[in-house]
Figure 1 (cartoon, rainbow, N blue to C red):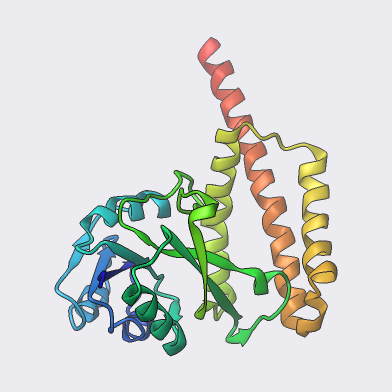
Figure 2: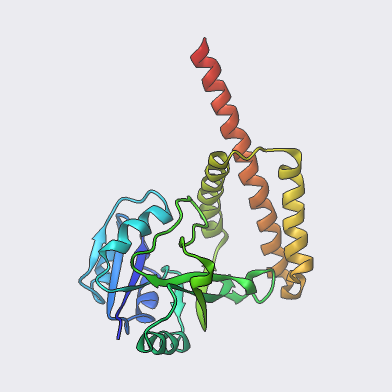
Length: 258
């Protein structure tokens, strides 16, 4: 029977780490990769595992790609500190491993929560993430929304859920909002995207319409409205930041030429 390493990236998560680790303590190995926490994160992790590594953080994909080879076992499951594996998911994973998994990776559906409220529409109900995979696989090199590089035909889906607790305060949201929109803008810059009027105006409007109307975010009430509005603002912001990065590049070139 193949064994499983659960990989937990973390940074200053003393308030939520224990609940995360409690939900995966059944795994054969828990591997915590810390980015240099200054709170009690590593002390709490030590209650669950002796495998606690510290590595400087560049971005999510780079951190995980560094950590995956450190796993002892053939199969790896990645879980973030704001996620919880349900008992149903635990049983499904254990059954899967007991039958020698035929594929290379498995996606898991997430039930996302916003301010503690389960969001069942807005497109969030379609949130599936590849989180269990063979140890020789790696993430695409992107700052945000990086996924495992694997042939789609070699990916299965599990029925059990990950509970994902996104934000409980707007301070939490906007702290992450600032970082993620900057990283998204850097990815756009690397891909050669341009901050056109369509991207700055059309894409945010389309994001809101798609999530609030087509994905029925209106049925999630006020939380759905707020969530869809923030999603539209995030699209606008990442293209605005892309515009700023291109302006900085142009000014740098002019300064260099002079």
